[in-house]
Length: 89
Image 1 (tube, rainbow, N blue to C red):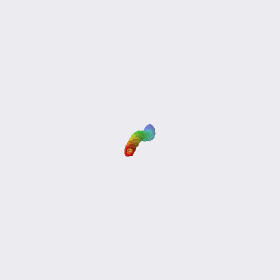
Image 2: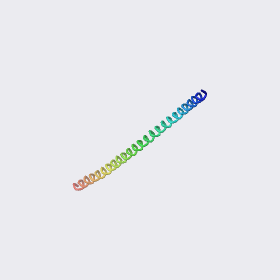
Image 3: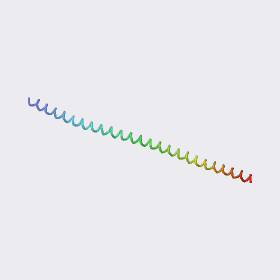
Image 4: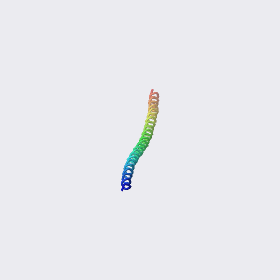
């Protein structure tokens, strides 16, 4: 009888310790999930920033190229007008 009572107490201790380790496992699992989410968000954010800056750089290059081409076309046009005026004189 005493042996049975001791076994019952031991099994209760084992159950409690397994629950405690289960909580630890649960917390570790939650932590791993959080870390995974943070890593995936960081990867997505890094990808977004890379895309955004590439797009911004492309837009700036196009803007600068258009600005430069507008300058050259304006200067060519103004030179043509000046040449016509000189010819008229």
